[in-house]
Each structure stands twice: as C-alpha cells, then as structure tokens.
Image (tube, rainbow, N blue to C red; front, side, top):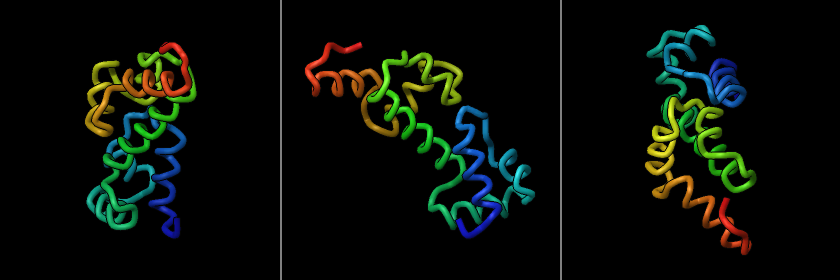
Length: 115
C-alpha cells in the first residue's frame, strides 16, 4: 500500500482479525484523527475500516470452514465474535447462507459426511 498509515492499519487487521478493532483504535495506532483516518481508508481501500474488517473476517471464516474441521464455535472466537450466534448472523449477512451450510456443501461436493 502506498500510504504507510493505511498500510499499517491493514497490517493490524490482517495480523489480529480477532481484535476488537474500531475506527478509533486503528486511527490511534497509526497516529491519525478518526475522521481523517476513516476518510483516507475508505478512499484508498474502497470500504470503511469496519466493513473491511468484517469482509476480512468472513474471508478467513469461509476458508477455514472449507479447509478445516474446526467447530464453528471455535472459529467465531478466533475471528473476534462474542458468540457463535453473532458470528452466524454476520456470516449469513455477507454470504446469504449459514456457516454450517457452507461446510455441508463443501463436504457433499467431495462425497464426505458433514462434520
């Protein structure tokens, strides 16, 4: 990323997606005001910091649902959600289906029993 402050914020999100990141905490870490940070982040990345964090968490979740047998409850904690229900709602809002449906669809595409 050509902007070191926005690149730094992206690095924080990618290194610790489970952290309770807010616009305020990210802007503090990179030494910018909240409003300037939010505007620059959105302009450069194409999504707000909170939206980007959610999208990154959901990308990781989908990959782990397909590639691992980790319980959904464990994934939800690893990705910063307070409960499996909150994680499931966020996942369904982004993908239109539940985490369990993704896992079952992947298992059935390989002729495996769902976990």
